[in-house]
Image (cartoon, rainbow, N blue to C red; front, side, top):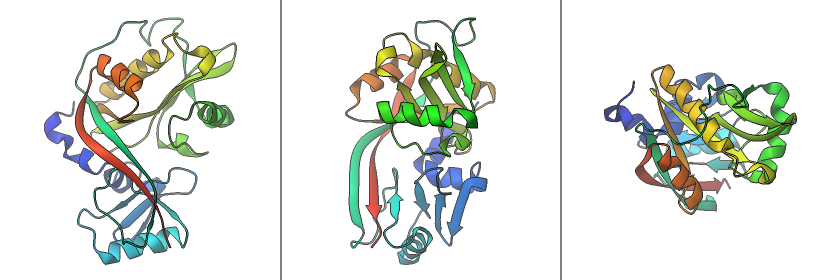
Length: 235
């Protein structure tokens, strides 16, 4: 299993994913990369971006395009309009568990979600706002959910895939189904799957989301670094 000594890939998780495991979902021009439309808005530039890299990204996205630079510390040209800025953390799983039924136990209710579940997934995201999620986001990796009476009430999935690591994202539970341990079951199921293939789980959380941060820490995640998420509009 990947060790913390190999965590340098997490310094540029978007770029490492687009150049590697998600290359089939990437659009690239020179030193700029982004995901295909409908998958994700995340973008990356080379580790030491220059004016040409930013020009490549602007051409790739087009005038008025949205550049979600995720946790990239480099700043684009000054005429790019800042759309949002959000303080957050990057956490890595260092082991441990949380109380509650195992994802492998009968009756856990955890099911795999495919393309046929996208309308339900989009509806759940609209009601819970866990973060960016588009019609093709499920193509990034495995998504798991919990159903109650046939209706999708909770889900979590795999997003960024830098070498040796898998990000868990889109963790959300419908308001009427909270307090039943669904998030814990889904997180444990993903951790089990990721570790079984020799990788390490990691995730990102907004600094202000104290409830989610506490849950992740109980599950064995620790803060690796603080990050700033930024999005820009291209002139």
